[in-house]
Length: 323
Image 1 (cartoon, helix red, strand yellow):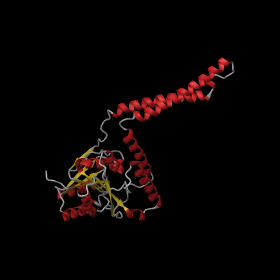
Image 2 (cartoon, helix red, strand yellow):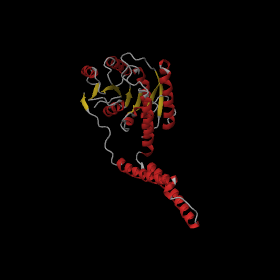
Image 3 (tube, helix red, strand yellow):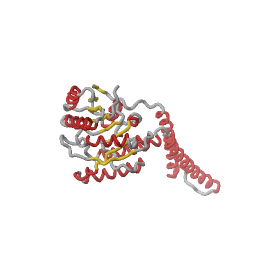
Image 4 (cartoon, one colour):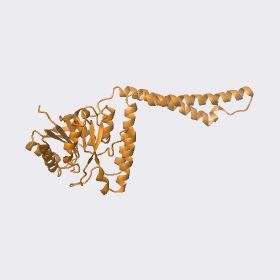
């Protein structure tokens, strides 16, 4: 196989109008820079003519255009995962298909990976917030600030920017699933690829259609995904360490509380002091509940430990066609 300098992975959903212009732009940049390249379009269950457009582009450019078509819509992370699996380039570039990411940024991203030694370079769309409402910019800033603190990657300002560059080894050694595309830098860091940089990139207005990622739910999901990733990174392979510890602690506290309640009752009996039944005390039931919950958490940790050691493959997607 011929050596490929750059693989451009483009996940898309209903972007048939922008694809020809995007590919022409990428092709022009690659020819000008003298790069050998491939463009991998991943149609994530598109219902418009996106796949027909990809097929036409592939017929015209059989050596450089490849396509993956999902039978249904899975999401951006599965599209990236399958695109990463097919990529052959020494450097892998990801960008959105809506023409808001500029292919003119590719040569500098490539240089930062190959010459400056970065494992991953993420774009930072500085002028993006100028045209966005406060209802979008404020949650975005809070989200990115939280992501920086949790991940420990303090030099990134925009985790969700679709324009990123990776060394090939990075994309072949991380697992992107669910909605974790927002946290690929965190996944890369956890996999041992710690040299992560940022490049200020130009952000353009959408030319066709409308955004597929609007609404408050994406910010809520983003925080939930971040918490999931933090937990999986710290306890995913050792759930007993957290559930077992909390369960044991609750059981011990509950057991000691029962002992105190029972000891108080025995003391009153030996001294002839009137004292109500143990079961009349609310503290007895609180302590008993803590013991039961502690036991359940301990068992949950044990079962989680067994499951984590025998987990089936998560990334199993129905691909209808590959060209």
